[in-house]
Image (cartoon, rainbow, N blue to C red):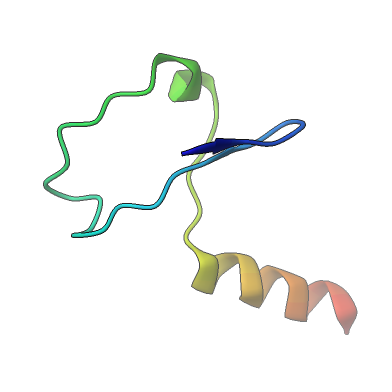
Length: 46
């Protein structure tokens, strides 16, 4: 886990679906995997 300026980066080694990790600060945000982030960047560059 790493904190950014406005982000929380979490690496789930075995995937997010079965993780018991709970991050209270993330309740008001959204989650995006890196594939989604890469596609959003690609779209923004068009």
